[in-house]
Length: 129
Ligand code: THU
Image (cartoon, rainbow, N blue to C red):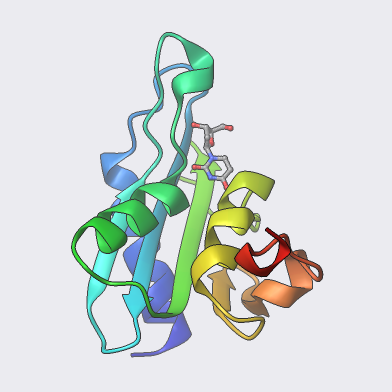
């Protein structure tokens, strides 16, 4: 699968976005180490802070299905069907990625491939506790 195909799957996942308050649709596709795919979308709420991001939806689906090792995630976000501007994962989602993924975990956005360490160079990890 090419990175373009992988990103295209994230765009497709954004079709399920429940984002009636922001109008900003986000889709994510998470690839496990052994090649399983978990999709996610953002899920908003009238009580705004209860909103869940697409990336964490995908991670929590995967972890709750028994998968804890991951290779890559593709994320597409935008308004009115325009996913051309890179949707950089928010800090909360990066922190969830940091729990399960190494520095070289791939994050595929509209502008290409990034690594977790590009966005979160230093991490709060279990070893800190
Ligand atoms: N959102 C995500 O799903 N992922 C991100 O990394 C950034 C933001 C969602 C949350 C909310 O539904 C909408 O985008 C606008 O913030």
